[in-house]
Amino acid sequence: MLGAHATDQFSSWIDKPEVAGTAEQIAQALAPEAWTRLSAGDGTKGARLYDWAYLELADLEAVEDNDDLTGLWTRGLLIRRTISAQDLAFFATWCPAGTPLDTLVRVEGQRWAIEDAFETAKTELGLTHNETRSWHGWHRHVALVMLAFAMLAVVRQRANTLTSPQKRSNEAKLQRWYAGLSRKSAAWPHASSSDASSPPS
Image (cartoon, rainbow, N blue to C red; front, side, top):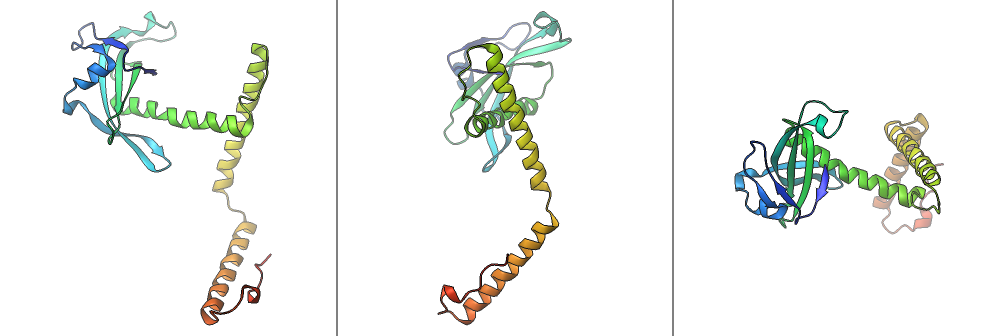
């Protein structure tokens, strides 16, 4: 899947419904029933819902483009439209014939996570902080940064799923201390902060 410009030309051939024009012209000509509302995955504020349309442009034998692929594949145009502003985004697709729309939407939705990962790797691990003068130097720097990023992601995921007995004990102590502090505040509303006991260690 590749991002496309609104002015890029698309046309159908080989027994497909007639489609021709720029990506934006094709999108504007679509009937309302051609659009389907689907989520591109969860974001920071929940499901990322958009309206989607997909047009198959041609079925081709995959081996014509790639010796490692076999079977019938489809070239197509995937269109994403925002719900509120009706802004459009376009993607040229190349996938096995019969690939459903929700699969294409899920693949496109991965771009957000990939971009977020690259941004984190740049800001936290110095992905772009290098002055390499050769391909080998650049490749080694990027490989080491991405390896460190992968290791940190695994460590964070495991840390988030594990709760040590010591951590549970400390959390319980803090909860009891806060509960006692709340009762004191209710009983002595004019008590100063110095009257409160210090948190448990």
